[in-house]
Amino acid sequence: MKAPELGIRIGLHPHGKRNSIADLGVKVGHSTIIDGDDIRTGVTVLLPPVKNPYRERLFSATFVMNGFSKPIGFVQVDELGYIETPVALTNTLSVYTVANAMVKHMIELNPELRSVSPLVMECNDSYLNNIRKLAVGEEHYFEAVKNAKLDFEEGSVGAGTGMSAFEFKGGIGSSSRVVEIGGEEYAVASLVLANFGRREDLTIAGVPVGLELKDYPGRGTSGRGSISMVVATNAPLTARQLRRLGKRAVVGLARTGGYAYHGSGDVVLAFSTAQTVPLDKEAHLLSFLPDNALSPLFRAAAEATEEAVINALLQARTVEGNGHVRYALPVDRLLEIMERYGRIERA
Image (cartoon, rainbow, N blue to C red):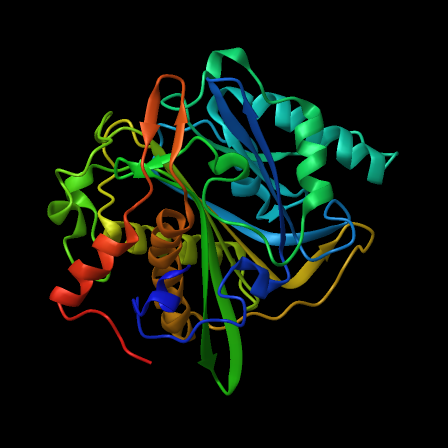
């Protein structure tokens, strides 16, 4: 269950219909790889709501809070301000394999293609996964693409299979918010690959849950790890404005107890589904919101990211692998703590 279903309210803005990045029409697919005692990894792919992302490019931007990370494709996004492929998530040593698969995917869709910038983000799952075995193959990218849908799983699936957060089981989490600007409704959503944090730092809706659960079993590698964050909106924004939006994801991250420690690669990709940059047109008219109208979107990005991290914890299940175990966040204990702090909302 996600946070709202447990009576845990995060933020002020209402959720979207699915309370996920699917509220922007983004389909998400997973390939989960579990083999023997030591392989716990996978691939997650986000498909933008266009038929051919190479020919219907979306405005985009990146933001790097702490650059201990190995994303592929950020340089061209920073230079040109758009994405031209799906977005993939996987483990640190598999970004290159997944990028190769994505290039082949784009060639299939565009036989004339001679240059493309694949977008692959990563976290290091080596605590639960024998990452040196390079278990991810190109076929797993294509399996994730085939599995992509609007109602997708979260938690210990796909790229999230071997990830940890706050020394509990982490993984994939998502959430969305709806805001009104000038009489129009816009959605903002976040999807995260959560693999970071010290147990004592975990904060949920302002409650120091990690301190309350500091003696819960399964601790190890405190403070290591990373988080990859993808923020999407249907508000018409420029690449410059999307970079500003992406920065607010880090506000939400901080509210969960993320401090961007030395070894934590904290990176954001933000994009808008509002309008495309057609490959075949020499000129086209575009419209954008003024900067002084963006504050509700900024708050929504922070709220959606904060809840996405918590949802990753809530949706994850206990996983054992590579000689270690990560326990799922104990929901019964969590609800007792939240009740004691007066942070459970009754229907």
